[in-house]
Amino acid sequence: MSFPTRQRFAWAPAALALAGATLLGGCATGDWFGQSPFASQSAPQRTGVPAGYYRVNPGDTLPGIAAAFGQRVEDLAAWNNLPRTAMLTPGQVLRVAPQPGRALGNAAGAEGIVVRPAWPAYGQVARLTDAGNVKGIVITGRPDEAVKAAADGNVIYVGAGIDQYKSLVVVKHGGDVVSGYAVNGDVLVKEGDAVKKGQPIAEMGTDSQGRGSVEFEIRRAGKPVDPLAYLPR
View 1 (spheres, rainbow, N blue to C red):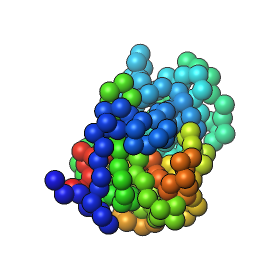
View 2: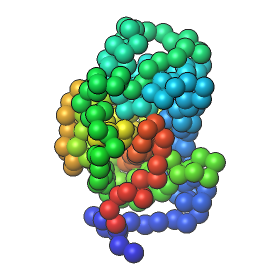
View 3: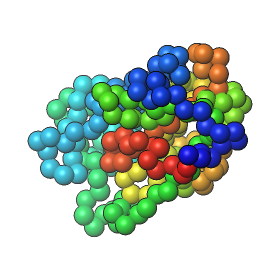
């Protein structure tokens, strides 16, 4: 099977089965949820609340919930009459989708929007899994390797990264689809920027193993999906 590479992708079966432990040598496998800027659980749950709402859990932040649901922090704050820097209380119920007739930007007509992502970088690849479910991939390359936007969209978060990564960039695409890029290198965009597919948004930088790497996720309606099911081969 062919994969789009500068050189051909090298796949390690053990890494794919064991959360990337062999290939990645200790790279991050923790869920973005529970670390800035995402919420405290493995996927946002709306149990016991109407569609379009979310019940706050311990450790949740407004930027985290906004990023998880592919919304802007400013919109989430406005829908809930909160300041952008509001502290949240566990059990608090927030609106996480625009009210009918008040859809903003890509939130309107989300069902009809198709996002076709491209590879954010080229190199050796391994899946990251959680309880047997694929939640993202790690791509290794040169420390100065460019990390590119997987699809057109708007940058909705730039800030603290996860585990061994210094920075996290989250881009909202059409409808309820967001992509995230955790890196140790320079970030080339800021919140609010519009980006095009293939546009450099960061550099890999050097990870704890001395390699360049990026941890990449795609989320739909706040839930991680396997990027390899959508990336071109």
